[in-house]
Length: 70
Image (tube, rainbow, N blue to C red; front, side):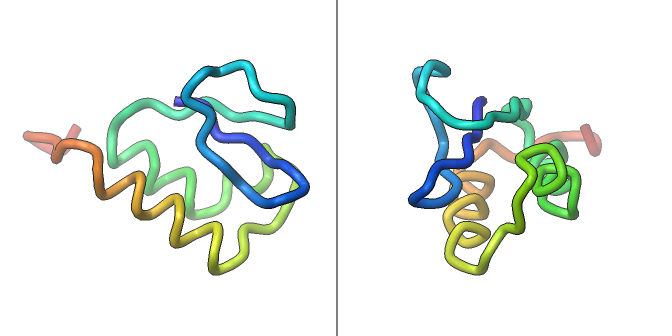
C-alpha cells in the first residue's frame, strides 16, 4: 500500500502512480502501527499532523485484524 506526501497532505495512493514522495506499507495493522510511530514521517520527510494521522488511522483500522501477533 503506497502512502504519499502531497501539498494537500498525506494520502493513500491506491494506484501506486500518483506524484509525490511515497512510502510503501504492508497491508498489516502491525506494519502501520510501527510506521505511525515515526518511521513514516521520516521516510516522507514531513511531520504528520493530526488530520493526516486520523486519515491514516482510519485506513489502518479498516485492515483485517492479524492473528497470532503477526
